[in-house]
Amino acid sequence: MKVVYFTHSLLSCWNHGNAHFLRGVLRELGAIGHDVLALEPEGNWSLANLLADHGEAGLEPFRAAYPELVTRSYDPADDVEPLLDGADVVVVHEWNDPALVARIGALRIAGGDFTLLFHDTHHRAVSDPEAIRAFDLSGYDGVLAFGEALSDVYRRWGWGARVWTWHEAADLRHFHPPAQEGDRQGIVWIGNWGDGERTAELEDYLFRPAQDAALPLDIYGVRYPREALATLARYGVRYHGWAANAAAPAIFARHLATVHVPRRYYTQLLPGIPTIRVFEALACGIPLVSAPWEDSEHLFRPGQDFLFARDGAEMTRHLRAISADPALRASLVQSGLETVRARHSCAHRAQELMRIVETLNPHAQPHLARIVA
Image 1: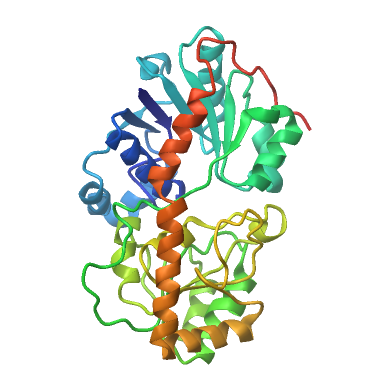
Image 2: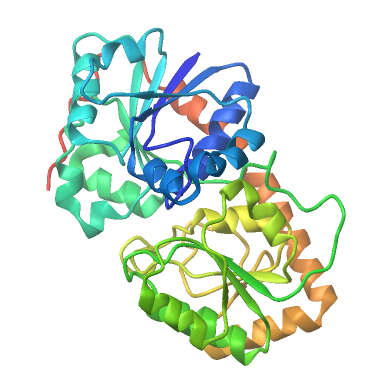
């Protein structure tokens, strides 16, 4: 099959977490014989920021890690139909312009001989529902949602059995333990500051516990305003700025443990959805401790694959224990790797996507459902 994916960007992962998953899934689809193409709008926000900060050199980690992936840029004002030539499956990510989403749907209604799916990997359906309702999905065959709580939102909006939960996962071709263990020191967190969605949580579950455990903390990420940098300085955190996602395995390999601090929307309004960093960290064989979230879909084995901390004091105790106990570190690494390799690889997700597509008939009339309140 020819699979075409309309993304915000494949080239850039600058504040663009969906690129992590998309790269892995497209690579796995290609490995099982499908023709894959990513399409991204010219001058997209993520790529523009990456180039402004790092120039063309910022693209080298992606190109070195994913030489087989093909991406094309396009002018959103141009005719979209030629971009779909020969496509059997078209997936459109929610970080696209509503006008583009509607134009692709209109082509499907007009007889487009392809399966058309909308892919939602964000919390806007609950944090800003009007932004999602602005999408005309009447020509789409179904919706891919990255967690069951988000799938439930679309079911309430009238999609019924035409929404599928399609979790993120780790690209095991790239995210794996180091071939040879080296020296590991301190704690690392790879994540963006964002829009104040977890400011208090970062202080309570990351900065203060690392300081109290007397463990050095390294942070990589973007969009850290002046006040955030001042907070990091107050806790003695070493801030390194942006790191290409392709560099994450090497970064993890230098540290004893990492921490998961979910955004507030994923603990309160969309429970059960971890960040992709959980999958990637476990795949890299680094012990992980998580701030509270509800694993309502039983994706992992909390307490075996990683440790939960109910408050900052427990986070401190867990970090001290991991630092002092090699047997605990080895047990967490073994269990985490076992779960990710058995259930949460991009190869698993590629197979899931193909099974979903097999249930849909591209020759049939599309769903013709509009999002309703």
